[in-house]
Image (tube, rainbow, N blue to C red; front, side, top):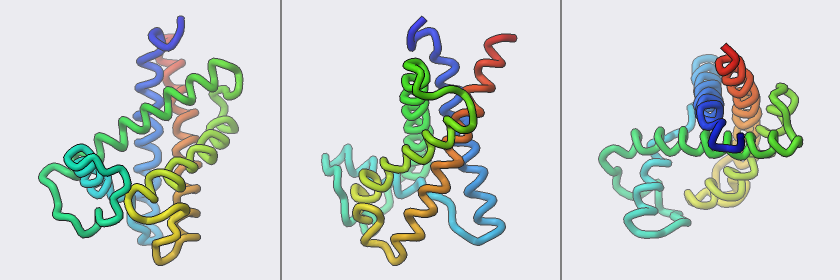
Length: 166
């Protein structure tokens, strides 16, 4: 059937994985006062990327806010989650992953490479958050968030397969 026949499955898994991670982050905030991801800054980075064509923006924290940046950031977050679902689907399709929570955990742990080596540097935080006040904590938090995200991805694919069967 290929990718095209599985679009709904991919969309469901991508959205569910983001919802699971977002819920986890809210629980961390309620129980440990650890602030959730600031999707507004992701929206600002995205807007400035398109306006100025600058991928690495070390001044993003100091640039003026842009109208709608928070909504844009949430949109980017969920589109990236769907992008991850495409990758997960491809790895599942070739037999490297399945819909088990074990595969989800492995995928989530592996996926943290993207923020550590792309998003953090692109937003001026350096590789592995080296330019933040507490790089180890930022990296650990990213790892835990992506582990939860990967578990949500496996759950999302399980749910999507069940929905398709009914």
